[in-house]
Image (tube, rainbow, N blue to C red; front, side):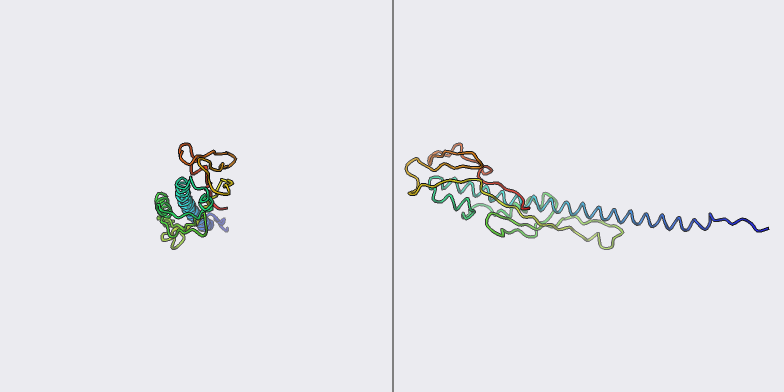
Length: 198
């Protein structure tokens, strides 16, 4: 009489192989997830750094505008970003924001008037995983922020006369200004919008 076949012993190695394969896939997906989180952190740091640089320039432009308030002939250059800066380099502020987001500022430059582009690298690596070399991989990201003037005005043909300054319209709001009165002036965010370039 032939004894019945026992398939249980033959199926066990197949079961082990399938479980090992599924475990490897799970670890691989985990590594991909870690890389995605790291990349997201890099992009957050880049966005924050670019906006910080642009906001720093915006604040300096607004301060310059207050200085030349009595001379409307100089306003347009400021609203176009052609003013001479005397304050801190906006890229210093970008570096601070990158650091706060656990990243390093690799590059920061204005590719044109009223723009700042930054490149950052995360301090943390993806970490050890089943993907070889991931423990040494640090994510990088870039971002560009733009500064947009929100104001328009019609300068008088012969410049300001006495206490008369042109009305300044910023984002639909009209400001009636006086050369010797710096109270109640538009704030930097009233004069300029700062946003990430799409």
